[in-house]
Length: 335
Image 1 (cartoon, one colour):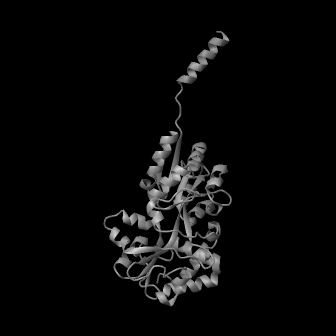
Image 2: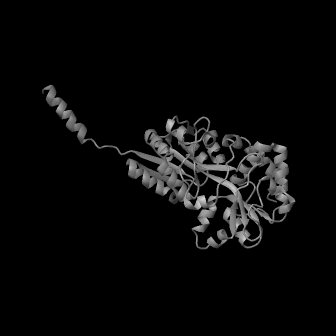
Image 3: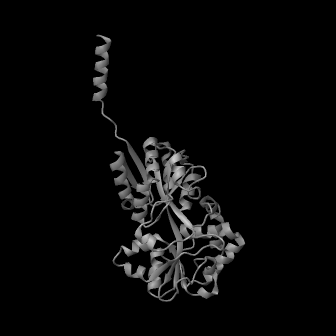
């Protein structure tokens, strides 16, 4: 057999081999329907198949238990506490990408590139349009003022979103001042903390309280729900700031697992999620804010008005989580 014949035979055999399609496996804390528009757009553009497993609780524990056998390439989750938890569990690997570091501001990603924010949400105040004047509340510090005694609703103090807010208070004011603030907030509650952020809006609509603490995007979700639209229409969004700083932000984010079996495809998806098209889809679908500078907000989100985001790094906020939880327990915030 000649060299030419052998080479031709090898080429024919190689052509006959099946081409393995690229895929990415995601463990998502976010409901699949919320990120499906992203998945569809990514697959249409790249041809990469995306498989999603919804993991509501125990994501870090699951990844630890699976170890190197885990099929997960990426983790999608919300809140700086959950992002920090998976990093501390040792199940995430850092990602070096000029695309990600260029598109995502330093305050909204891990300094060691373990996780990257994809959208942001503000922890703000829902205020009754009937009983609270526009501009009547301007700072988080004001929530502890006697002016609001018996007029505030909130979900549990141990909820991740509220722990993150109190952690930010500690970062700005110190633990002693933060405890005093939390005690003042508790003294102003109209009822014991209960329910989720939507329940606080319903309570305002029902006249149980005048203002409540919540995330911006819940208003967008409620306006899309025929039953809850009336509740959402009864409130306006107020963007309080920390004195001398800005409005508290939290994030949804992505991280690559240490075991990632499809690392190259996973990196492609991470970078794609930080680009203009994905940022627009993600933000509009979830009524959140794009993290990439220059990407426009949805018309609804833009209608809520502009605000100055707090410039403090979220890793700094996360570092005070244990102290914040201790304060909530010491003052029996939920009692």
